[in-house]
Length: 85
Image (cartoon, rainbow, N blue to C red; front, side, top):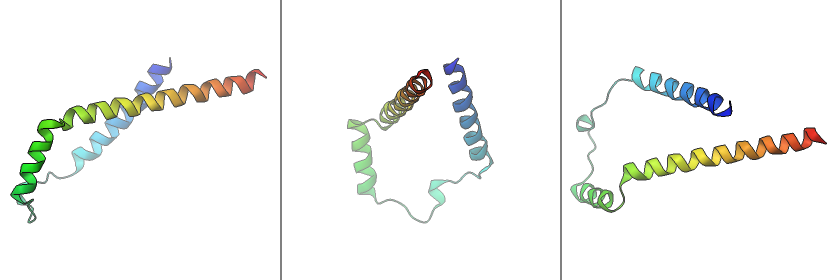
């Protein structure tokens, strides 16, 4: 039941964010007047080789989700302890 409620909340929030992003105009980074210097681009490519950014985002997203879940469970346990007294 709790997972269904969390899925509903997170799914609705994700849907809202995707709706807002879909309404924004697309911006091509090549059209912007400011470009990163080539050494910075090379350093970013080397950093991505050793620390995959996509994997790090996935790991951090799971970590934050688990922290939220643990805090919610601890809050529910604390409320049940108060109500049980």
